[in-house]
Length: 184
Image 1 (tube, rainbow, N blue to C red):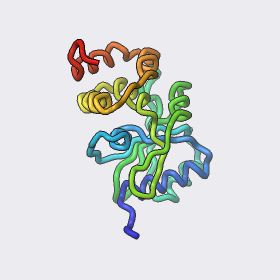
Image 2 (image 1 turned 135 degrees about the horizontal axis):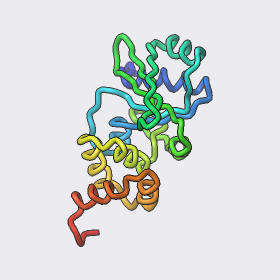
Image 3 (image 1 turned 120 degrees about the vertical axis):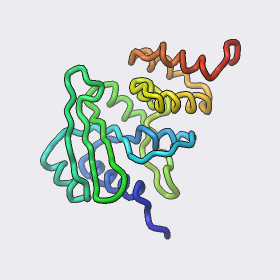
């Protein structure tokens, strides 16, 4: 048996903490892009989780080897509450706290995928990942969207989910950039 790498170790520790607390969570970001089959290197772990700040959660995270730091955004901030987790070694972890109903719906739709041999972990549905990437709208996010769309089969729920979050026009622009007019 080979020892777990730093990503696998961090994910296993977090999964244990969240499981003990009954918190839903799912991988988002670069690891989720890779889990959905698009080659993607990343130096951190991004999660969406149904958690709120508490002394008990902080104690559990510290016991698991993490140094937690809560960051609160303003009322219009796209990320109202973020938990940044650091360890002396290993990847940095950003946990977007699911505070809105649509984020909790994304957690409910998460699927278990293998990120490494013998380790399955919840990952947001590909449609939801695309919507999150469109909301972020950075250059790497849009490149990830194009790559995911290029690899994905039919995604009948994508347009309604993009429309609900106000990113349908951006989705259509990305689609047009990878699929010339007249192609299926």
